[in-house]
Length: 462
Image 1: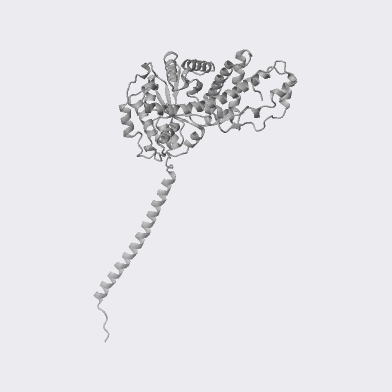
Image 2: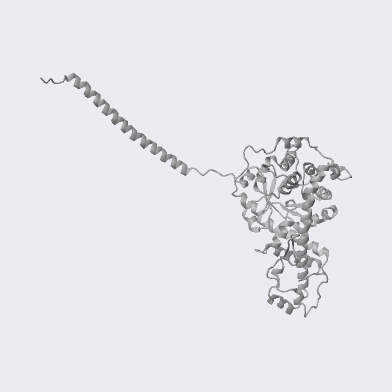
């Protein structure tokens, strides 16, 4: 016989089934709710990321500004000087020669024309001589310096003829003439800094200019800590360390290449010099220049200012800072060397010269760093002088030409379409380099039929 189930048992089973169904339904609903909440949070995070500014990249130039390191433009590319935010400008023999040799513009050559015109007018139209050439070269430095100053502002670092590095009297006279010319063009004397090689005569000249004439000086080619201390003893306004050449001297001495700049002995010497000036609160400012690569700038953050070329200025705008956090601003050895160095020094009180008071090793390193650079500057100045002499001679000769000869010059085809020649051995500019392509006709041809005033003997015109 079939028996129906007890109603109580069915009731318990039904309750369990309904509870399980409600549990499953609650879990699914909760999961859908959590999914919606997570999706909303993710969308909010994405909106926050979109609203948040991108992380700031610490470029080399930003790092220099944050460290209060002045940036000086070491280029005669006037468009570059106009674009970058600079604290000053500097000119060197290499920059002037490069500007005169430039094939894509005549900016510097125009200033050479103006300088030659001024030198001729002030001489009263006399015959070409060494003084006229000297005046034209100094005028060229002033014309170029004024053009740089108008585009950038800030101090203008110019230079005396480095070929006179062993004649203190000549360098003092040249510096005073330059300051007078700049002042006549409206520049304040405090905005003019005269670069002088840090030879014994150069240090003496800087000491004289600073103490007795109030002229700011920049002693260049400083090669060691004690060499820098001597320059500070002379009360120079600034000193300049040519970083790349100095590091190269240490590499040649040890016949080694240092991939890690933290281990480079030249870096340690420069760090010690920077620490010495900061420990003793010396007022002379230290400028770094002639860097071979951007990592050298990052490895030496203690400079008061850095001179950067056109390429380095452009790269520093986007190049990220490469110095790691564990790279020391100065090594313990550099700090110890700086604290142990003599201060104040009395080298300039000696009658035998400060180089004789240095150790043989220090003298050797100074000579290895300074004299090759002076030799290179001499070649550059010789090339500049040749171009200046040719321009002055050309303008003097034009004053004697008849109207017919001038028309012949205007209508004649170029005598040298290539424009420039170069001696690969000496890296000097050849005859009429930089100016030949800008001429119409050799003066010898133009004056072959008529030479009323006569050309100047001993001057090569073509």
